[in-house]
Structures are given as C-alpha cells and as structure tokens.
Length: 213
Image 1 (cartoon, rainbow, N blue to C red):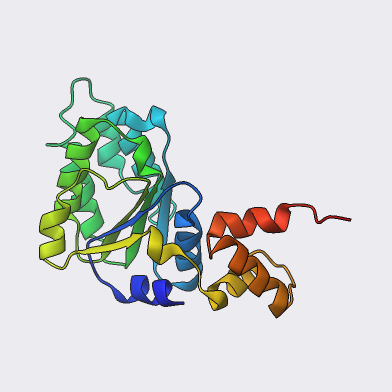
Image 2 (image 1 turned 90 degrees about the vertical axis):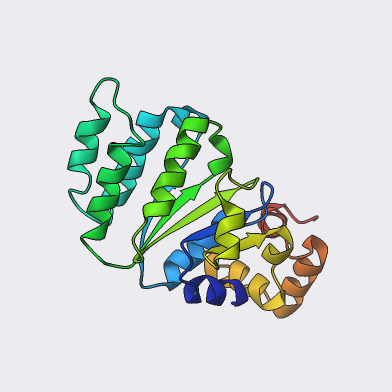
C-alpha cells in the first residue's frame, strides 16, 4: 500500500498523521505495525494525561512493552517532589534510549487530547534528543505544537493528512477482506468504496449496517 511503503521507507524523526475523527489514522498505524519488523511502543492518550507526571509515566510504560525494565531512573525522577521534568526526567529517558540501538517506533495516538503547554515543551525536548534508531509518530486531529516548520525544512518530518488517508479500491479491499476478515466480492467492495469515498470509518460503518430485507 502506498502509505505503508512511504512510512516504512522514511527515516524521519517525526511522523504526523493528522485528520478528523474516523479518517483512519489509527487503522493506518495498526497496519504499519503489523507489516513492519520494527518494534512499536503504543500509547493512546486521553485528557487526564495532561498531567506531565502521568504522561511520562505512561510513555515509560509503553516503552517497557518493547524494552523490558526501561526507565527506572525516569520513574525515580518523576516521583521526586518538585522535579523539573524537562531538565531531568526527559534527558534520563533519552540516555536510556541510546543504549538499545534497536529500531523502535513510539506511537502517541489521539495526541489532540493533550493541551498542556508543559507536556508540549517536554515532548519537544524529547523529540530533539531522539537517537537515530527511534521514530516518534503522532496521530492527532490537529497539528501538534512542535517545531514542524524546522523539521519539515530539514527533511525530518513525514506528514499524512485527510486526503491521503482515503483508501483506493485495492486498499479498501485489503481493509475489508484482510484486516476485518470479511469475504466480500469485488462488486460489493467497489460499491462500498464508491459510497464511502474510501473513508475508513465509512467503510467500517457500512459493513456494520443491516441490509434491507
């Protein structure tokens, strides 16, 4: 698939998948994870994660799914009253990420839930210090307040937006029959693709809708 090939081939430091609800951001990233040999650490965010300590605790927990025992120093610093996360905990995590050297993708899904300027600033420092083996991927309904212009100019940013997330007919077939496990005919897939204009959520809702008797 065109987008999967693009994501897998890029070595950019940051990937932003930005579109409204239901456009298939998470679906694309799930497909990427399933088709790539890299290890993926995944964190789905919600408004309660605007607390910086909670945010970074969950980041460490996600990274531990692929790097066991990761972040002991970071956990300790986060528990320290009055800690300056940006100056202490974030650098500690970056130092640990340097060691494994294994290709790794950290996905922050639903990043639009984060409105904390402190978290944005801390993540900016984290992004700047990422080792070459680690890629940060953000899925969001809006562009994250990170230095996108500079990263774009340096070739360190991959962007996927709504128009690119529309499935073509082959991708609609893959989504319906391979990912969802359906056994639809080519005619049914073409009809659904035309009706939904290749919108992932539209395809999903269409196959859930009861057919008229």
